[in-house]
Structure formats: C-alpha cells, structure tokens
Amino acid sequence: MSWIPFRLLRAAVFAAVAGPASLLLHLWSGGHAPGLLQAAGAFALVFAAAYAAGGRQRGFLVLAPLCLAAQWGLHELFQAGAVETAHAHGAGVSMWLVHVAAALAQASWLARGESAFAALLDLLALWFARLVRITGLGAPAPVRLRRFFSRTRVPRPAPVAAAAISRRGPPRFAF
Image (cartoon, rainbow, N blue to C red; front, side, top):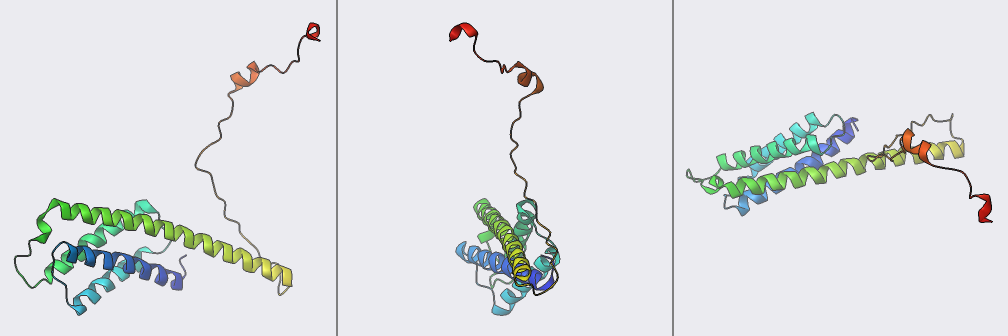
C-alpha cells in the first residue's frame, strides 16, 4: 500500500471524494462558486496532504479527522475567494453539522474502500503466486498470508463449569 503508484491512486481518490463534496456543500449552502484556478489549487492542496498521510492503510478513526480538516480547509478556501465581502452563509450551526456529517460519511466510505483495495491486492498477489507455482515459471514464490482475526471471542466454559458437567450414563435400573 505504500508503493508510490498506490499512494498516488489513494491520494487521488481522497481528493476526488473530499474536494467535490466540499464544493457541492459550499454551493448548496449559498456560497459563491470559486474560480477554476482557486478550485484546482484547493484540490491540489488536498491531494498533497492525502499523499503525505497515505504511507499506509488508514482506518476510520484516522480518516475522520483528515476528512474534517479537508472539509474545513476547503470551505475556508472557497469562502476566502468569494466575491462578496459579507459572505454570511457560513455562520449557521446547521452548515457545520452538514460538513461534519459529510466528513464522517466520507471517512466511512474511504475506510471501506481502503480495506477493499488492500484485500484486492492480497488476492491478486496470492493469485499470481499460485499462477507462478502452477506454471513453474520460477522458483517457488514465498507467500506471506495475512491473518484475519475475528473481533468477537468464542466463549469458553470456565473450569468450574466444565468440572460440573456430568459425563456418566443413565442408572442401571432405567433399562
């Protein structure tokens, strides 16, 4: 996941999700459309920040603050480029709640996407390793399997309860 083409792809996906969502929310809440150069610069900043943070797979708890920061930063950039000096659409609490909801939805979507992308890469690596092994194209490829741990534990009987379980049969007079 830290290979440069994958980092570029992941940063592009993050910028493609966070940028247009923030721009649409900005326009939907009554803001003015930024210029093309300003929007491209804002998306480039988000892309650079996502590339810097994309050294490894991130989960929801890491992506949520990043999405919140991207929403806030893009909103401020779009607001700074507004034509009017009295840009009043950002004063309401509802606007911030919409941005927070959008950032949390983005973080959830991106975390699931990262997990699916990592699983896809694992499956492709295993498939190619099996293909190399079957066709005999090279030396046996060392395959490092990923271990998946269940989040729930199977309850085991306590030693006291195990000792209380009787394994003896029915009495003789029952037959």
